[in-house]
Length: 95
Image (cartoon, rainbow, N blue to C red; front, side, top):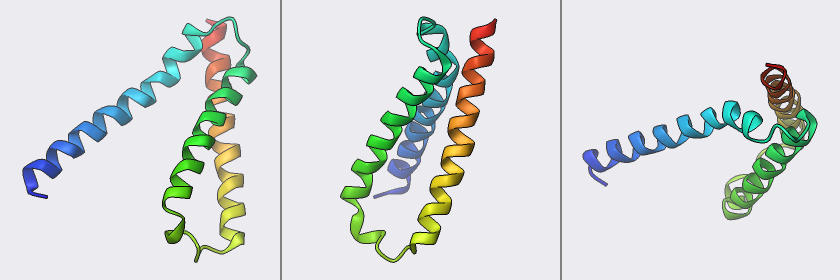
């Protein structure tokens, strides 16, 4: 892959990541009929399914990671991401 093609892909991936991040602020307004908990659970259920798909595709690269690391990563992901999005939606829906 040449350098121009890599740079182009980097810009595209950056734009997609920015758009996905921006949805964190749009979704609570678009789905105001749902509670903060329902939106949070739906969002992270979809993230989990997507991550599981990636894990299945790339499973040969993850076999050497100890269970202790997996459990710590799951704890941090749950408390950080789910807590953050729950309170973000709660704040946005109050205004």
